[in-house]
Image 1 (cartoon, rainbow, N blue to C red):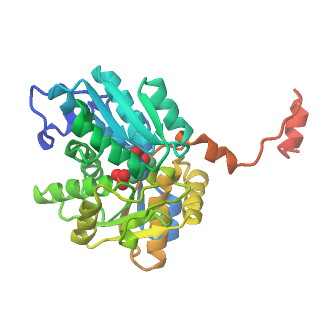
Image 2 (image 1 turned 45 degrees about the vertical axis):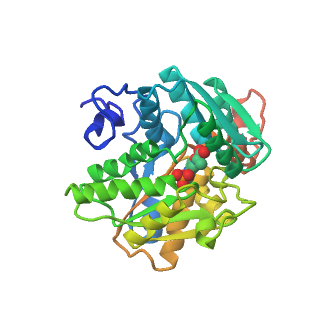
Image 3 (image 1 turned 90 degrees about the vertical axis):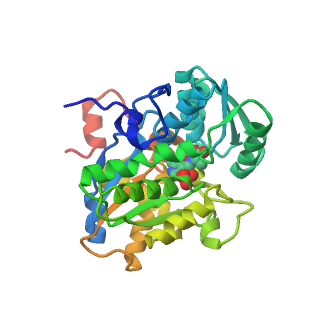
Length: 351
Ligand code: F0G
């Protein structure tokens, strides 16, 4: 068994790096493609979960960040900045540490999960909470990167998508070919665009015989691409994708149209149900935004958009531990008992 070397080393010939690029890595990528037995039974499809919560900082953002931060270092940056609903900031903060760069992050106040805030702070990022939305934060961040010597590492930085496309490579490498359908959450719309780029590249070089249909899913209260217009006050329990004006809007539409796919909305209720299903029937703990892909697949199945026997991959983008508040708020309060094995047996109804 050969040790995984991080995605820049694994896919070097397909990434914008040279022998002189300083590789900043936490050995991201190489995440498991887990068969989803319950979701497969519900849909009649052969469903797999690409479990991106097992990346070093707990989300797919690390794939983009290893490339973006390596290139920033190569280009002589001393500091990096991003806007974030949480995961990008956690990842940027960690990779900046690795690179010896200063990291600044702007997040919408009160709208990011506790674990993500903790990560950015522990890694020593300069974190500012903005009294506004993610879209406001991104606009501010772009202005700052234009006017000050600080490199932007949001997904408008093309190196981010380059790194993120490697998830599609891994899926094809694991399955031996592309799946028929790929389901993915859509927020700022970078990831769906990156996967599509990866699948296309592999098909063009004959590493895959075809490309999948891309099915993207936004949360109903934050579904600008579905609505066809920006959403000024996006609302959803899935804070990671609470985004009203995605930066990669047009790339996502291209992924949808070129792949013969679709971008749809799912309700918070559907997202919460898929979150619970993944945790309680698949044993996979994801964050709410990540469950959107599975909520979406179940909806697509009801609409007849997927056929029995088709191979479907759902990307689950982030780790459930990111958002302990949501996890605990939906769970029953544990019983408290004395130090007494019989009391435990009674409480557990063992007798
Ligand atoms: N899932 C999770 C867990 C996310 O954190 C994000 C985006 C998405 C899905 C959507 O991906 O933006 O490429 O369409 N989070 C960004 C952030 C916006 O700041 O962490 P996308």
